[in-house]
Length: 69
Image 1 (cartoon, one colour):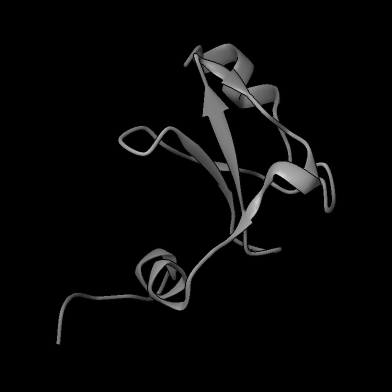
Image 2 (cartoon, helix red, strand yellow):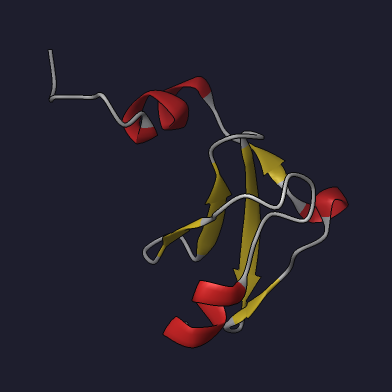
């Protein structure tokens, strides 16, 4: 995904930063707990197309995480 485009994208709900997950082709909004798909290199920024972050994904993404227990 183009770095310039990624720098301009924000969550359509909260206007917060998104975290790009290259392997999964997804954009994560950690504040709202939503995941927006990227299809054929195009971000789909529609809330109705987003899925919720799982509890496991939220835990892995938390900033204070120091490693596996």
